[in-house]
Length: 306
Figure (cartoon, rainbow, N blue to C red):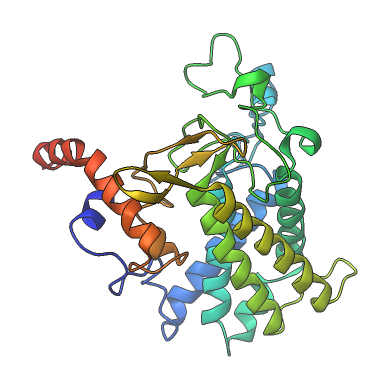
């Protein structure tokens, strides 16, 4: 996807879920079934970023399995913030396209889905204060660390500054251990989907848990505002050559990494995830930086592909 987007301006009719046609009921039901499967996965482990196709009775018994959070359903709990964003994004797509299909909505946005979303909102608030509130660890295990990427500081990851609004992520969208704990495009995706979730609440979605829709709308709005503020205050860097650009990773202390990743969400895909339009000056500068830095790599990938 990175090379495809580099050759043309993004946002020209691009849809990450372009195949989810509101008038095609089988496609809608397939997407709803996929969302229900994701809900089951997150019900088992809220930090999981993937799920097994079938329950594995032997998993979760050994010491490495327990250390990596492996269960019968989850291969591991290597927390990726973008996985939460993808879940909320799919939820929003199914909600938008199931208007008038009450049977799909009632079967999908049920008590299990509401419980998972409430837990995800709580988890994101915790990971805004990763150093003081989070219990999540993903350490290495002797003999298997090459197969399972581990986080530094005995599984805690590099130190980040809490209270800046950004949400910590254990791994990047490309499954790499991040050099710095706040992955900017992952936080961008979350900001977009939190705004969407608030719109869903305004349309009648219930989250339950003993709170009203107005209560949840306020809480989601506050979380969205904090993430957006954190991105604006800590996510950009002023460079001599390109002007102000988005960093790929930051730590809230002032350190940053200027790069991009071929996996979405990425900085190049900012318009595709809906965070900013292609004409946005900071995006334009970031795009020039990313494509300049990756020009030789893109050439090699293109020449070596079939």
